[in-house]
Structures are given as structure tokens and as C-alpha cells.
Amino acid sequence: MAAGISSLSSLRYIAGKVVKSHVARKIRGIKDKSEQRILYEYSIKASLEMKYAELKDRIQELEKKKKDVFIPLTKVYLLGSKIHLLNTTFHKRDFKIVMNLFNDIEKEMKHV
Figure 1 (cartoon, rainbow, N blue to C red):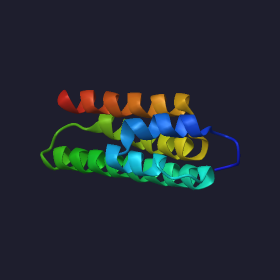
Figure 2: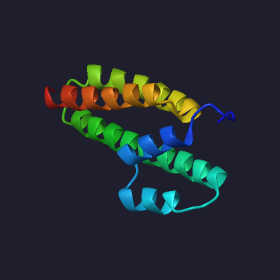
Figure 3: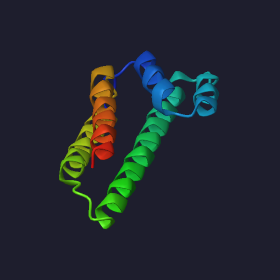
């Protein structure tokens, strides 16, 4: 991440939504702000990647059951690039786009 792109409060907000609460509390307890920033970024990336991988696995399971997963699969590929963008900016607006896309894919999968 380039210096100054996201604020520590933005990282805290995002982490509060996707990182396990006990991990976020431990990070918040660290005195060094630059270390906090690095740990928040890492934990956000790891959490989103795990959620993304789980979603891809669920789509593959539906595909094995011969379900039509074209739309969710297409949106998953888009989600991958949006996560990559979020991992460089850590802006709240990019985070909201990613989370809306996760929710949209979940809805699509229910209709498969």
C-alpha cells in the first residue's frame, strides 16, 4: 500500500466488519500505529481471501451438481479484481463495493 492512501480509522472500520473480533481487539491494543496499520492490512487481506476462497468452493460444488452458475461465477471473477483493488487502497467505498458484491453473489447462488 502506498503511504497515506488510507487512514487508520478506515482500516479499523473495515477490520471491524471482516476480521474476527478478538484479532481486531489485539491489533487495536498495539501502541505502534505503523505496526497497527500493517497488521490491520494483513488481517483484512487474509479474511477477505478466505471468504473469497470459500465462496469459490461453494460455486464449484454447485457446478458439480450441474447447476447453472454462470452469473455467480462471472461475478466471482469480478469480485477477485475488486478485492485486489481494495487491498491496495483500503478505502471504505471500495470495501462497500466488495461487500455488496459478496452479498449479491450469495443471493444469486440461492436462485441457482
